Image (tube, rainbow, N blue to C red; front, side):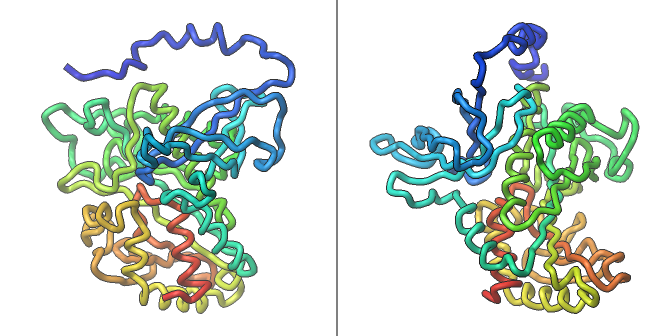
Length: 366
C-alpha cells in the first residue's frame, strides 16, 4: 500500500476559516527563510511585525537553534539571521512577507553554508561588467516512498522520449503543482521566466532570470522554497537530487546561462570565446563548486550520457548538449549574447556557482 503524506489527509477547507480572520491593524507575519547546514535544504520560521518593511535593513536580526540544523553544538547553538531580500508571501497574501536571510555565527563570521556573502562581494567587484545570470532549475517530484511520482510500483514507465514538453495524462505528471509554483513565484516577485516538463517522467524544470549578480541566488533559493512548500500542500516531495533514478534516465541539472556587457555587445561572440578559454583552464575548480559535496553528487550525473559532458573533461560547442559549455545556435548566428554552463548540478548553491564563474571570467582567477 502506498505511503501517503499526513498533509494529504487534512481537510484544507478548514484552514479558510482562519486565513480570513482580520489581523490587528499594522501587523503582518514575516517568514524568515534560510539555508541549513546541508547546503541544500531550507528552513523557515515566522514572527509578527508591527510595521511593513520596505528594505531588508529595516527588519530585525533574528536567531535560531543551529544544533538542530547541522550548524552548531548544543552548548553554543545560536545562529543569527540577517535579512537580505524580501518577497511577497503567496500563501498568506496581503502585506505578509517572505524574508531570505544570510546565516552568521555569534562572532559575526558567516556560517560555512553562507555563500551569499562572498558571492555579493565578488559581484560588487565585477559590477562594471554587468554580469547577468539565468538558471534552468530541474527537479523531480516524488511519492512519500521516494519513488518518482506516478511511476508504476515495482516497475518502470515507458522509455524516455514522449515526456519532454509533453501533453496528455499518459505523458505528464502533476502539472497542477508546476502551475501553482509558477504563479506563486510571479506573485512573490521572483524573476521566473518559464517552465516545462523534462525528459524523465515526473521531472520538471523552471527558469529564473535574467538576474544581475547575486540576485540570481536570492531568486532561485526563494523559488526552491516555494516549490518545496507547495509540494508540501499537495502531499508530495520535491527533490533536487542530480540523479534521482539510476539507469537509462536523465539526471537533473541547473544549467547556468551567463552574459556580460562585452558578450552582449556587437561582436560579443569573441568575448564569449575568451570566457570559454578561461573556463577550460579551471574545470576542476568549477566542478568542486557546482554541487554541495564538492563534485561527488555530479559524478552520478556527468557521465557523458543523457545530455551531459563527462565530469573528467572540458569541452564546448555550438548547440551541443553533450558539452560542458554550450553556445546556443541563435547566439552563434547573431554573433553576440550568452553561453550556457551545463555542469552545475540541480542541488547546487547558485551563489557558489555565480561566484566561481565571476572569479574565472571577470577576475581571471584560474
